[in-house]
Each structure stands twice: as structure tokens, then as C-alpha cells.
Image (cartoon, rainbow, N blue to C red; front, side, top):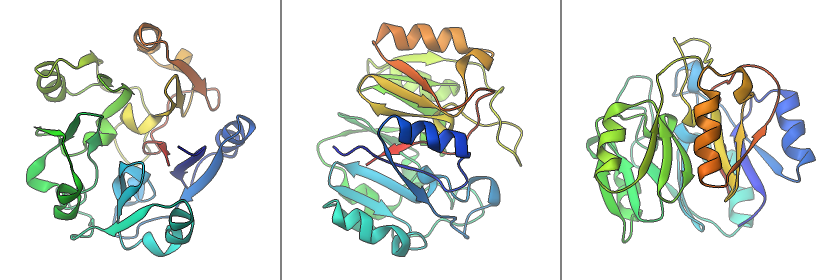
Length: 233
């Protein structure tokens, strides 16, 4: 796996600098004009990394990212249905792929993405903004504020830290989500847009990360900010 990270092109300069100081190459996810402004450049809305060598992407961002991704030996596939403004037409790629599980509202998963799933158990949930709502800590451990996700994943033996919603900034919307404010960039490092010491439930998150020997990397001081999941390529 490379040290390349895909992030919202509107990333704060300090956040980007922190990633680069820690040895990561930063690729900017362009704005997808089919999506509403608040999430238009969120990577998890326009791209899904199925495995280390397979990606399904929106055709609106494909031309900008294709050369770089192909140079990294990814097989690129265009989604069948382009994301659009109105829910649920904007969630086709916003799924979660764990080692043994694929988690999403399957009624609205893009057909091409579903075809790419191999040897994974599908967990069908109501929450369409699945990747936004889930912060992956490990293959069998996650953080979310969605009770439906918690219930479905616990049935499969996945350890879930359930947090109250709120206290994460996302301009244009009431609040953001923990999955969109973070990203597991190493097996033992989770990056955050902001600092857990400014988050109402930061202690709970830190204790859960400690349980799995995952360290936080704060990209800047201040409250958590939902820029879409940080995706390691």
C-alpha cells in the first residue's frame, strides 16, 4: 500500500501540511458538480476503493484522477449511476468495505460497485451515508453515531463505539459525522480533521482507539470538521 491519501480539495493548508510533514503524498479530490456544495469534494461521495487494486469512481472526477490512479496500478471502473443532488441518488459509492464485510444500504449501492464485491458478507443497513457515518478503527472495530449501524454490526461480532451525534462541523448542514472527520491512514494511526481534545466525546474515542492500539494524528487544533473520509490509496 502506498503513502498516498485522497482528501477534499478544500482541505485547510495546515491540515495538508501536517499530512505532508508526516510523509504522506496528498491528492486532492475535485469538486463533483453533481453533488450539493457541502459534500461536493468529499472523496467518499465520488470514489470507493474496493481493494488495494480496484476503484469505482464517478465519471465527473475520473478524468482528473485517472492518470495518477492508473500509475498506481489501480483498475478503474466507472459507476453506472452518477451521483446527483437528491438523496438517495447521491449515495451509490458511500459504502464501507472491511476485510470480511461490505456495509451499505444495498437498495441504493451502485450496481458496478456491487459487482466488484468478492467473498465479503453484505450487511444491509438503512443509513445510506454509510462511509460518512462510520470511522473504521480496524477490520472488526468501528465508531459511529448511528444506532441502526451499531445494531447491525454488533450482530456480526464487530466492536462498535456508539457516540451521540453532533459537535462536528459541516458548513451548510446541521452537523457532520465522525467517519467524514477522520481516516485510518495506517493500521495504527487515525488522522482527524481537528483535535479530539476539542470534541465533546473525545475521551470516549481516545479510549476506544487505545483499546486497539491506534494513535490519533491531529491535523490541526480546533473542533472536528467533516471534509469527507480521508482515503488511503
